[in-house]
Structure formats: structure tokens, C-alpha cells
Length: 469
Ligand code: AMP
Image (cartoon, rainbow, N blue to C red; front, side):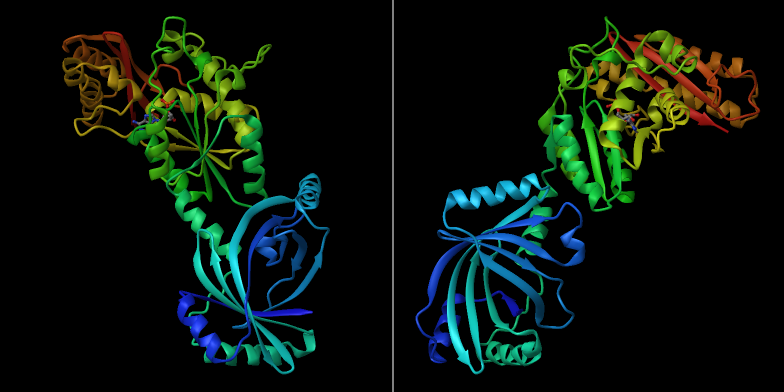
């Protein structure tokens, strides 16, 4: 049999009922319908245009399979529907069987359906007034007919719709409408998962739909710097994942692990505003279960500059990032130039370990006065905050000298040291001119170099850098 139907939106049910009475319909039947829609493990019904559901009408249960829609104004598609046993238990068995076979429930469409029948020889036309949960009032005009009479049935259907004053055709199924409406509202609420298992489940489905995944690893306390990475990921990928995990293995014993800010609710809002689809927020135990003993080391690079000041830091970074890469398996991962040595470590790791992920580096986002945004800036008191602009000033001073022709790295290093030395409360950790490729101190300025600084203000350690050449 073929199902020939047309759906209409913005329908006033009271007026429609009056018109139905005028054309002589009989008493309607009213019942609640709950449709559990599934997607198949071997193909994507959203792409093939097929549909498969378990429909529950009171005690009755049915399986319905609908074939792809044929092109045209009126929806014509093959339909196979048959009854199952009655009752909740039978419905539960079938739902469980489908899940075991790898079918995934996409959504439930719930509606109160008031059905009228109208004889239009040789067909019986069904007019359904649907009050659909989350979507509102619709009407469907429907004829079931043998395939060879489908065109004639479509004609009759058009006449009935016109007679009833139904005009606003809605070509989409309730399922599509519901998924679209939910996607819209999800813009403001990314899904949050806390276990690797949930994360994989969610992303398997994304990959099955052949969507590209952009990934932004963070430690939370999100600001516009993080948001710029999300925005970059959003612009080039179908699906954006942000991880929020304060990674204990990258903190030294005397560092700020315990007091590192964790404003999770505010972080979710930042992600929501930037259109993030999924937040991965694991516990330390989820990432490092008892017995964990494998670490990634990017030798050489990990021990200099930041690594010299923070022994073990890059070992922790490389390890957690590689774990996250395996968990998320993104197409692209986004990092900030603000943490230039971290970028270099990740790029080396990806190259050495054949990780098939594109690393995208985004520019440093700064406050109006030049201070690079950082989750740690909130530790600064007012005086320290005012003085902290010295980092950017030192970098800019050295940059200016380079543009004026200075080519001795030692001179650039010294000038940065002098700016910091002349700043109240500032304690220099290091100032360096670094050869970008080798990440060694630059012997000369013939190739691109990084000007890098680490400075303490009281307990708070700030870093910043600028690329030259
Ligand atoms: P974090 O949460 O500090 O681990 O940072 C997560 C990511 O955001 C890293 O790739 C950082 O480099 C990046 N990031 C942090 N601050 C900034 C900033 N001011 N501008 C651009 N990216 C940043």
C-alpha cells in the first residue's frame, strides 16, 4: 500500500471541526499516540528518507516502516504497518530488542489525534487533527491506497484539503520538526557528559552522520580567549566539543591546583553562547583511574622555558591531550598562541605519534590595555592588575626594536628584562627569544622567533609571547 498524505500547520482546530461537520463527517475517534522513532545501525534514515517507529495507541502497539518519499507536493511513500501484541510489556520487549540490535531511539513524538473519516469514492479520506507535544496544532489529510491509484488519491486529497480551507502545507514530518525545534533550543544548552563511555556514545552517532568534529580542550574558567577558539571551531566544523578538565598531572606540587577556579555553570553559558554542541567534563578519577601509569613525554622541548620553571608540566599536558584526542577523535583541535610552548609540544606529539588530527592555532585575545586573557588574571589584585600590563609592554618594546633593525637576540632579551625590572611587584621568571622550530634560545634573528615572558605578581604567574618574523 501507499500512504498519500499532506500535513498542514497553523491550523485552528475549532474552525476546522466546524467545516468538517458542514461536509458531513461522522463522529471522530480521539486517542493519544506515542511514536518511538528509531535510526538503524547500518544506515542513516535521516539521509535515506526512510522512517521506522514503534507506535503506541492506548494498549495497541504497531511497527511502522515508511519508505523514502517520492518527489511532489503531496507526500507519497510506501508504508508497512502491522500490529504487535498488546500492552506495556510487549512494547517494552520490542523496544529492548531494537536497542540490542543497535537501533537508536531518536525521539518520541507524542500527540492527541482526533480522526475523522470522509468517504470520497473509491477512497476513504482520514482527516486528523493533531495536538503535538512541543510543536502545537496541525492537521493531516491522509489516504491509504494501492500504489497504482496513488496519483488519483493525491488528487482527491487536494480537493478535500481545499474544501476544508487547509492551506499552509508543512512538508516535514513531525519527527523532523521536533528534532529541528530541539536543535534550536539546544543552542542554549550544550549536552554535558562526564564519562568516556557517554562521550563515545554521543560522538559515534555524530561520526555516523559523517559530521566533522572540532575540539577545544580547556581547564574551564572560560573567557573570551577560550571563546575565540570555540568560534573558530564552530566556523569550520559541524559539531563542536569542549572539554573542561582541570588536569592534575600538569600542576606541580606547589602550584594552584586546589584553588584553580571552577565556575562550571558560567562555563556552560559561555559554551552555549558560542554554539558548542557537547561539553566533556570528566572527574580526575575518570581520566586517571587507579593503576594509571602511562605518560607522554616530548623530550627536549618539554624541559625548557615553561618546562624548566614547571617540571613535569608538559608531560601532564601531552598525556591529557593525547588521551582527550583518543576519546574525542576530532578532525581538528584548537589551541591558543597564548600558550606557545604548549602548541609546540602538541604539534611535535601529533607529528611523532602519527595522530590524524589537524592542530589549529588561534591568536592571543587581549584586554584593551594588552594583558593577555587568562583564567589566572582573576587572582590579581587591583595594583597587580594595573602593573600586569608590563608583560605586553615589554614584548612590544622588544618587537619595536626588532622592527627598527635590532638583530641581536640578547639585546631584545635584556630590554624585556629591564621593563619587568622597572615594574612594581613584578618578579621575572624568564624572558626569552626562542627559535620557533627547535624551541631553543635563538642564536640569531635570521629565522622566525618567539619573544616569551613569564612573570610573577605575588602568587600569580603570568605568561605571554609575541611572534617575530
Ligand atoms: P586553559 O584553559 O588555560 O588550559 O586554555 C585552554 C586553551 O585556551 C588553550 O589552548 C589556551 O592556549 C587557550 N587560551 C587561553 N587564553 C587565551 C587567550 N587569551 N587567547 C587565545 N587563546 C587562549
